[in-house]
Figure 1 (spheres, rainbow, N blue to C red):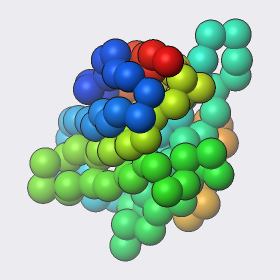
Figure 2: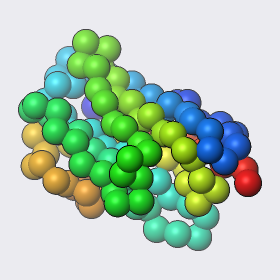
Figure 3: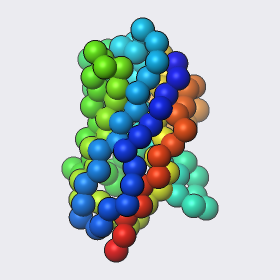
Length: 124
């Protein structure tokens, strides 16, 4: 599967953004989807994921209550709604996919397909 992320930009503290990730192919519904981020000088870290089966979601503790992941299988797209953004959320955000991934996957090595990343900058 090929992934194309979009929706990043510059936003003030407390603002919102919605990231989108469009996937190619006809088997999107069989892929678990994840969002990761990487800030300058830091390792890539898990943000959120949504399962391929019933759409169960799980999140990193630092985004719980602020970010929401969702998917639209008819549009082959996964979204990340980000609210109450903080300067520490500044990073390149990547979407990732893995077919039939187990629920709870949150390591970058659990996902085999990656998008190109979209930059989110939160100003203070």
